[in-house]
Image 1 (cartoon, helix red, strand yellow):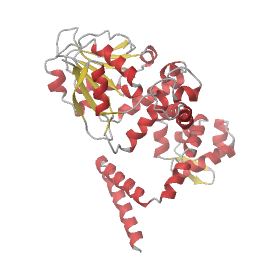
Image 2: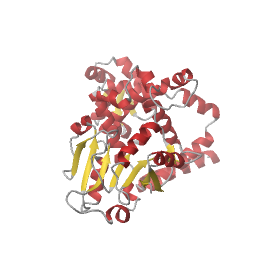
Image 3: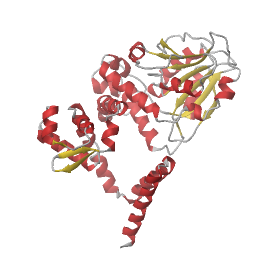
Image 4: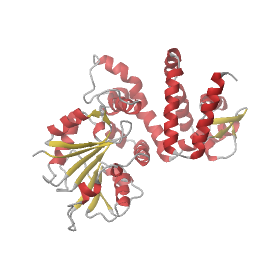
Length: 392
C-alpha cells in the first residue's frame, strides 16, 4: 500500500470511528478537516468546473420533487423501478432515469440495480416538511433571482442593491416585494413558513448564551398586564415557544406578532403565547414590554426600512427598562465564513437586504434612537445577538 493509500484509509477509518461515537461536536470538527483537505487537494481547474456544473443537480432535483418522484422513493423501504415511478407520477420513464443519474452520483438516491432506486438518509431528510418546503421556496423564489442577478446588476451599472425595484422584482416581473408576492401564493407561503420553522429548529437558541436571568427576568414587572417578551414577525412561534419551554415560570405575557396570513396559518402553538396580528411598519401596540425580540428580520430589509422598523419599536420602549434583541448573523470585518457570506448574496438577490457587520448594526440603531449594549456571539458561523436600549 502506498503512503497516499494508507493516509486515505486512515482518514476514512477515523471518520467511521467519529460517526460511530455519535459525538456531534467531533463530527463537525472532522467535517471541517475534510473540507479543509478538499480545498487543499482540489486543483483550481477542478474548482472552476465544479462551479460551472453546480446548477444541474439542483435543477434535476426540483423537477423530480415537483413530479412527486422523490417523495415516492422516500415512502418505501424497498427499491422502486423507473417504470413504477413513471406510472405513479405521470412523468416519462426516460426523463426520470436521466434526472436521477446525477442524484444517484451525489447520494441523494441510490440506484440498487439498473433503473431501480431506493432512498438514502438524504432522501428521507429532503421530504421533511421544513426541507421540502424550503427547497421548493428557495428554488422558486431565490434561484431565479440569483441567476438573474448578474444581468440585473449590469443594467444598473453594478450599483449595490439599496431597495426595490431590485433583482427579485426584475427576475419575477413584479412590483411586489417578496412578502406581498408570497401572500398571493398560499402554497409558496406555506413553503416559506416551513423553511423558517425548520431553519430555527436546529440552530442554537439565543437564550443558550444570553444572560436571561440577569438581564430580562431580574426586575421584570409581575403585574397581570405586564409583557415580558414580544416575538415580532416570529413566524409560527417556534422561538417564543422554546423560550417558554425553557422558562415556564417567567413572569409576564408572551406575545407572538405576525402578519394576518401567518397567524391564520399556525397549526400548533402553546396557549401561553398570545397571537397578535401586526405589521411592524405600523406603531407598536404593546408599550413598555421588557423585551422586543426580532430573529432574522433585519437582514431582509435595506437600511431605510430597518430604521423605520426600529423607530416604531423604539417609540414603544420604556427608557431604563425595555430591551431590544436582534438575533442575526453579525459579519466579521474580514474573512467572513462561507455560509453567512452566501446568505448575504441571497438577501441581496431576494429581498434587497443584507447581512451586516457590528459597525453597520451600530449605525442602524443610532439612526433610530437606540444604542448597542453588547454583541453576543458564539462564533462567526452562527447567529449572534445584538442587545440594544434607548439612547440616553
